[in-house]
Structures are given as C-alpha cells and as structure tokens.
Image 1 (tube, helix red, strand yellow):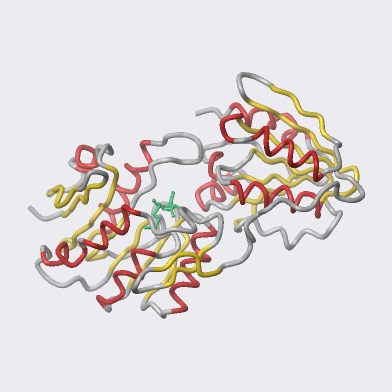
Image 2: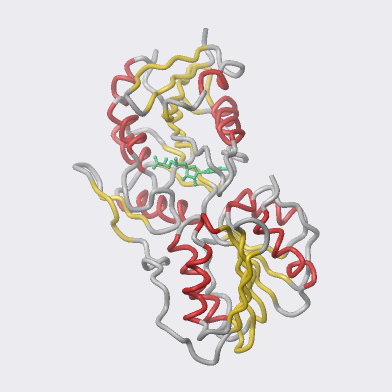
Length: 347
Ligand SMILES: C[S@@+](CC[C@H](N)C(=O)[O-])C[C@H]1O[C@@H](n2cnc3c(N)ncnc32)[C@H](O)[C@@H]1O
C-alpha cells in the first residue's frame, strides 16, 4: 500500500546529493526504491533493513542510534514520522544535534498521526525556521532549517535511549524503553496467555524440550515460561525490543538466546513449544498478512510433537487462517477480549 506521506519525501530522497540521513520506521516496510549513494539510512526493523540492503542502500540497523554521527555533520535528515511519540521526539532532537546550521529536516506525516503537533514543536525547537504545507488530504510536509542555537528546550523523548524497569508483577521486573511494543506495560493478551500456560502445558503429550517466543518484545512470555527450565529462543524484528529482551534475559538470567529476525526467518531447528502474541498492524497500515507470516513461521519451526499457542483479540480470524497449515487448530480458552488458539501438526 502506497504511503502518501512518504511519497512527499521521495523526490528529496531521490535527488539528495549532499550528506543525507533517512530515518526509516516500520511504516515503510515494503518500500522498494533505487538506492541513492548520498543517503545513509537507519532502520529499526530488521525486515525493512534487509529490504534496503537488498536494494543496495547504505543501511544501518539500530534502535535509531545516532551516536556515529557527529554534531553539525549532516546536510539533510528525511523522516516520515513514526507511530510513537517518544520515537518522533527522539529523532527530532537528534536532528537538531547532527544537522549543520542551515541543514534541513524534512518531516512528513498524516494529521491523524499528530504530524501537525510534531511540526509545531519542531518549529519552536528550530527557532521558527519552518516551511510547512498541507499536501493532499490530511497529509503534511514540513521543511525546517537548523538554527545556530535551539529555540526551545529539547522535546520530551521519555529518555528514549535508556533501558530501565518499566513494568512489574509478582514474579518479574521488566526492563524496557520507548520504541518497544507496549513498552511501559504488561500486555493484557500476553498476561492472559501466561495465566493459562500451565493448563495449556497439560495438553502436551510430553514436557517440551525447548521453546520459541515469536515476536518477543521485551520478553514477557519468555520470562514467564522460564520456570520450565528449557532453552528459550526469543526473536523479534525490532531493534529496541531485542535490546530490552537481551537485558531481561541477562538480568534473571534466562537459559536461552535472543535473535534478531523477520518472522523467525533464519532461525533453524524445531521447537516443542511456541508462544506468540502476534502483531497485526505494521506501522499505520493494517497488514493482515503479518498474522499469516507469523502462522507460517510457527508452522515451519514447530516440531512434530510440538504445540504452539497464539493469543489474539477475539476478532482476529486466526483459526480460519491456521487451518491450511496445521492439523489441529483449537481455541482452548477465551475471555471477552482474547482467545488462545492451540496449533499442532499431529492429527
Ligand atoms: C503484540 S507484540 C507482543 C510482544 C511480546 N511478545 C509481549 O507479549 O509483550 C508483537 C511483537 O511482534 C514484533 N514483530 C512485528 N513484526 C515482526 C516481524 N516481521 N518479525 C518479528 N517480530 C515482529 C513486534 O516488534 C512486537 O514486539
């Protein structure tokens, strides 16, 4: 699906000749563009990063870590705003630091995503040097010129770069940071899965020998399955999630590893237990096929004796989607919001 906001930035990306940085978030997954050698791109999603590499972009994969860029070193920064406010604030603050005085920050986004507020805040920070226009529909494009000195204090990025304890329950303290899915809370669907984990394990013919946490976020499911004392592989495509999950694995410590991958792509071996709270939004779009890709990954990685458990909102047609891939598909618990679906290869 074409992203109108991003399309406004395309001419600048394609024409860039001075030192340009493109900050690319999940809403650009699926973007296929000819590389421009003047442009360095930072992506925080592994799938986007690999796509960009395949198209010969000079790409970095990081949690929007700008530390390699010196102060006043970049001529132009191009950014289609992200979904989460602290991420956007972090990028705008860093733009002020790394752009040369007179350098340009190009911002685009939709009104419904708060782009007008971001533009207003950036305008104050950039001491008023801003040319903003409404393009098509509710989509805005702004060009800000970097001042010699900031016009206001930095935007509140909720200490974007710092991992710290953010949520806890009777068993664990979860370290996390902005940029991770549901970074400062425990996901209710995941908590529902864990409430039913022991009952779920009773349905297994044999105790599991290993586990895969598919789309691990900061590692909630892994930590709460660690009493099983089996090796756990946790995987996600988001750089911030990987950093948080690694920290939580180190702190407790958890027997296992954290792997950066797109829908477990590149993870080999089979797993007896797969736990998953799948995403169903990619950026601002509604990507139904992300659920399909998670189901396919579970199918490929599940051992013959294994069992996968997906927690989803009630309205996600997971059973219908899973039926072509698994021999047994059964909703084993449901509440007014969530359902747990059990998937196996066995008849
Ligand atoms: C609903 S969250 C669940 C997070 C965590 N398991 C929990 O219970 O709190 C879904 C997770 O899937 C990850 N994700 C999204 N797209 C992905 C992809 N293509 N490959 C791997 N992980 C992905 C997101 O970064 C997010 O951490």
